[in-house]
Amino acid sequence: MKVLRTPDSCFEDIKDYPFEPVYTNIETKDGTIVRVHHIDEGPKDGPILLAMHGQPVWSYLYARMIPFLTEAGIRVIAPDLVGYGKSDKPAAREDYSYQNQVDWMGEWLKKNDFQNLTFFGQDWGGLIGLRMVAADPDRFIKIAMGNTGLPYNPNAPEFFKTSEKPFLAVFAGNDPVTNGAERDVLRMAPNAKSAPHIGGGHFFQWTKAEPLSKILIDFIKG
Image 1 (cartoon, one colour):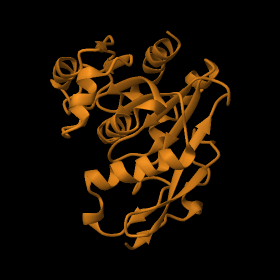
Image 2: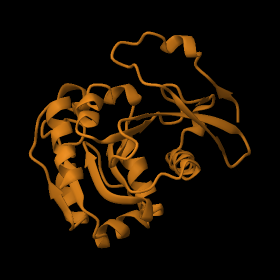
Image 3: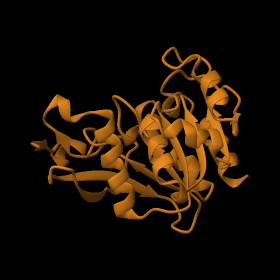
């Protein structure tokens, strides 16, 4: 698999993104080494939020939320999906399958051996991350999702039907991309609770950073 890499110089002096990069090398099924980037901010002994972005953005989407979360004592881990941001980028369109993304990020998770995570994913990050939760549930203590849906995979829906882990559905309420998905989530995951709608459209991590952060802080600490 041919892999491209955006030069580090392209990320210099980005406004509101002062975070130190952390890189993990993973091996894909064909033996290719792919570098995955994440940021790790906040107290190392604090409760951990794994925050995953979707398309067509990168971890910068969480830049406005991170100060609120870390001030509350929460450690924030936010990766760039393969193909986005500072992570390596496979050159061929056909490399970007849903299953490949799940496999790549699952390998990244295992390589870093993160434990006791609260998950939050939006858009594609929710669909990928919820598959990771279902495949490796012992790493996660709480689950939150926003402006996304439950993955349609033979094993994943069954996991969420029976899981007793605290589960919070956080939807903007005015997102044209995922309108109606919240109803399906609450039906398919009986343990899920619904947070108040805060508006902000599809990318509410950016437009509603403070109220969304407060919802997640209360969920993590509750």
